[in-house]
Length: 230
Image 1 (tube, rainbow, N blue to C red):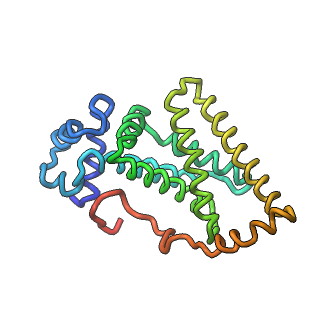
Image 2 (image 1 turned 45 degrees about the horizontal axis):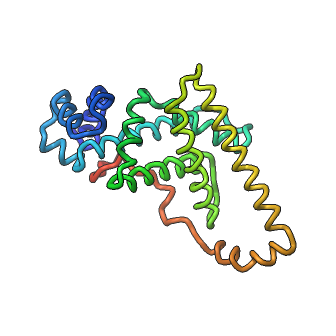
Image 3 (image 1 turned 180 degrees about the vertical axis):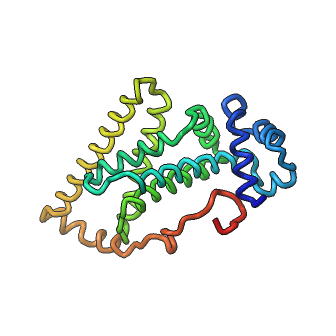
């Protein structure tokens, strides 16, 4: 078994235990037992135990979202509708809402908050990249930061939504995106205004020199310490 195989076997086994035990050491031990994975091999694949499995579960959802984006016909959609659809695909990739709820709890802890923030940022980067974003300056960062706020708020709303077909969540998502679009239009008009445009000329010139990180387009494998070429 490769490292990816080990991690995937542990993840699938852990899904039955996480709703009761959370992404915890107890769930990790139960997954090892159910999957028949040697503890040493399991720890090699997941040095942080259930935390690595929680991140692997998030990755699994991201890849399901990307696969769906590739198969959907989105060419004629407005960009704001493409973004809304991508977030919806991401949430619809979840096979058990309780696994996400337990993940939110885990990544709200101070020691794991950075991991959670990085996972959300990666999801938003993947959405923009899949939708053909070509930003090569500070807009690369602002687009992802703004989407991270929309995505995070939508996930929290969705966790408490019991409306048929999650209709309330999709309406909430549309409102959040509309608010962002209104802000972007206001920002564009402000920059075009003679006085504000003159005042912002210096700062904007500096910001336009900002570039995205090198190698950002590369897809990484599932979280962990190994790479097996997949």
